[in-house]
Length: 301
Image 1 (cartoon, rainbow, N blue to C red):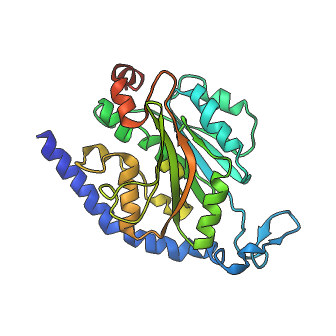
Image 2 (image 1 turned 135 degrees about the vertical axis):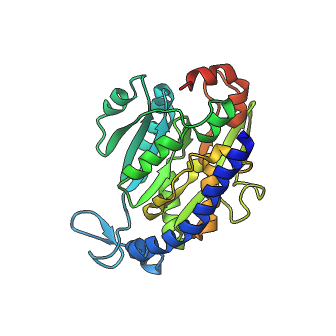
Image 3 (image 1 turned 120 degrees about the horizontal axis):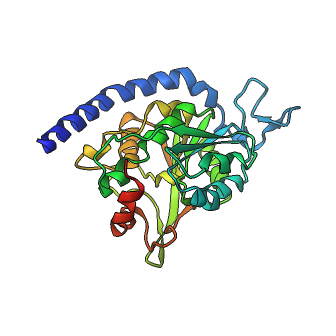
């Protein structure tokens, strides 16, 4: 009965997304697309500086070359990793016009006080209540645990562009700068890049999802995503764990971006690092499986 129920529910959501998201995308483009026009013009390389220090392509009424970028970081009781990895790499960005949202998912480890103690402008902690929304298996935690805080952060985002970073991942200092300029120059709505991953002491470059996950085009891991804020109506699927394929929340969303017709670009450069957490030797779902007892205890509802 459970398998049948999962198929019905996941199939219903898939049909809903397929029917509504392309339509909503066209509407969003009509309403907000003009805010991004002109940034792929050749004169992009010779911006004008305004009296207030901002830059525009042609004049004060045109879209700014340095728009606000919202970076959101979902987290649950991993404040040390957050403060040692994710946040320092965001604060070290060469691109400065960044809003940071730490989506604290039921955190009880002092996340809010530690982040607020930084005293950085345009940085907030968004408290997100933690409720049971899926059967608490190791696999389901990996598939769906970040859906609720990620969606809450998307609703709160105030930037023209949105990027996601996990609390235990690290960006290169030029991460936002390179992705933003690549997106502006190519008139892309969504861009991503490669990242470097460490498993059992071996580092390798992961360019993009394979064709078994996303048919086309190239889409990198979610720690390399940057996209226009009018795409935030496409939220992470809380029922992704029910599916028989693309059960991880990010691959589910990436597949829907492509199927809806989002203009997608991929930058062939390493712009992030995914390394094992302290006491572990690998990353991803395999790390969860190897450390199943602790993961189930840490993420118990």
